[in-house]
Image: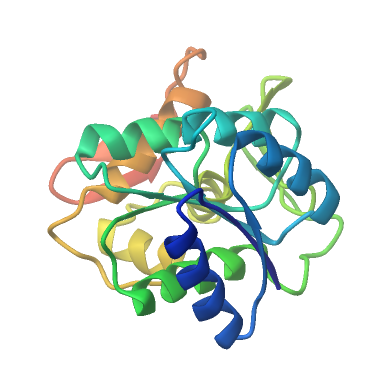
Length: 227
């Protein structure tokens, strides 16, 4: 697996490169926004580690540029900005996960493994198409369409929506979602599930009459058209 590390601080970049190589990954380094965009096109990495602060741009703009260019590789945002608002802004920009500095390297590896598993080595059957109400999810193509309108989703947003669509009219708790989508035990001290549900609602429900992603207060979330 090839990982592109976008980091302008030499010592941090060297630390990440060495640790990731020792863990079996092929690692390339980009030091700014411009080189990151070029290397994404040239290398087509399996995953991107992206620092929030770059010398020639905000890392969020780099994230958006990669998304606009059609890059479908997971993006793990690394930043010292750790408030809930900062995390939501990062996810809004298209990041698939968010890790606050300083962090333990083992946690970074766990996040990387989780994101790479989302891509999966074996694609599902080419005919697999999930439907609920006017929402369609083409699993092999990783495309979501509602009422004829294509909905761009990040890797984690797609995984969350797929889990909901495979379990329509069933209440899914935050613990169930954490385990299925993130492959981790639920942590009561984080609002990551709520943040992703909020992001997904903006894309799937906000511009449409019938709201499909509903909250069951005290229980979890359910995909339902209310009928």
